Length: 214
Image (cartoon, rainbow, N blue to C red):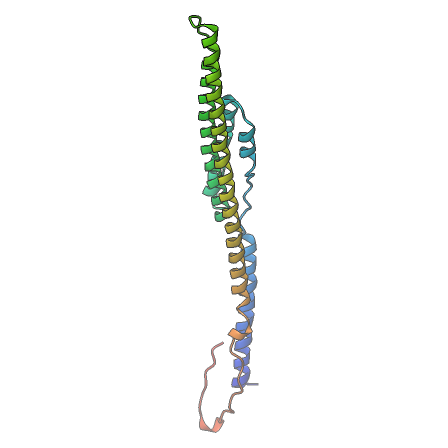
């Protein structure tokens, strides 16, 4: 039994719908399989260690750890397996922590030199002059320490603010990309498929032929 033109058109539309549904499922599956890994980064680890450190030797060890953490993040970036925006925020913060660690190391070394100078004895000076010199150095050391700790805290807090801001932007970007992907797939609905229309009867006696692409 020959198919009418109307039936052939409906069959074509149905095939188009089936193909689009298959494409929708494939896109959803691909998105799931290619989902980026989460970046594992503790933004409080190095800052808290720096805030507690009181000697240059300890800060030197923290600087080594900060550099190591930065290198790990940079290696993650090279793999292409992690979320780019989140990784960028972590790397930016890690770089700031390396800078903060170097600054505190230099600050403590300067303070320790002044401390050593204060302890240095001057046999030729009178006890009064020695006492006055020590008191003067102690005042200078106190001012230096307060200024250094204030500068260090300011940089650490600024790094934290920048990281949190970049992290929020990264999360928003990831959410927007996810919505765009889902919306793009959902947008491939039946409205995009032309509905079957009622075809006029074909006059067989006119000898006309109509081709339908399947």
